[in-house]
Picture 1 (cartoon, rainbow, N blue to C red):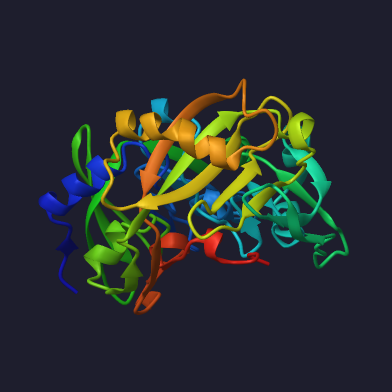
Picture 2 (picture 1 turned 30 degrees about the horizontal axis):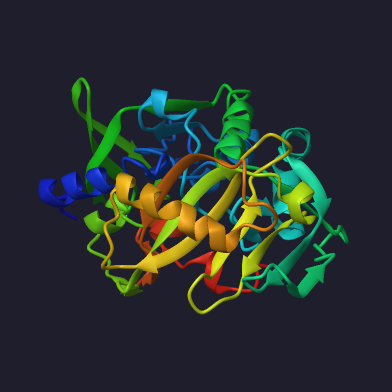
Length: 349
């Protein structure tokens, strides 16, 4: 099969859009022979591309996990990528916690996050409780969930990855081309030192909705993008517990001012408020911040005073799925394979 690549025009556009979306992962190589196995990523949005590696390392696979710039890591993201079918925003339900237990990261998640009774609440614009779902059970009978920011979860996974000498995280490798045979996959990367070719038995593309792996394979990303509105994700500090007794966060049900308000971790961590605005508005940071007080005045319970905003990020919502998830020795995973927005669901479990 001849080598295919990504065009520079589309790449520059994706990089420009990705500046505020902190993590975006790229392809994962896996080699079952006594050779190196490689993973390659640009920037992680979330832990979806990294969660397999503690387990992979523990069974003896040689892995190289490639990421983007190291100095991006400490910045809290305004976007997210689900790592399993039981995550909503920055909360992890029992089903996904069971998977985290299997790879040995659950206790660290409990230590750094907020463990509480699993559930969801729906409220109207006045803050009145419409419905709630408590004690969502997992496969092990647990009814607990954990609030934890995805950047914190990614940090925990990286710490566990570092325990395995057969796994190495490398930076500044951008995928630009792929070639595969019946025996393996070769990827072409652009690095700070020039071109680099890496070969292994298999490659898994965990590189987000703008997947370079999927583009190289010319696999259509079927579905649609909502163009009549855009989401605004804001991280902010406000004492929802003291002001109104909100423990878990809530889904706000309203024709105009619908939103999700949810914790991102234990005490001291910001809350996430995500809401929609008409697409014709100005989505520069200055314009969003100018409109934000009026929106918070509608959404916040209690006094609505004393809040602080950490960051904001506008983005589009997508409902898309790759036409096929596998081509030869290359597979697509996570958002590279399918994207849909958690706000439009009752739960991911």
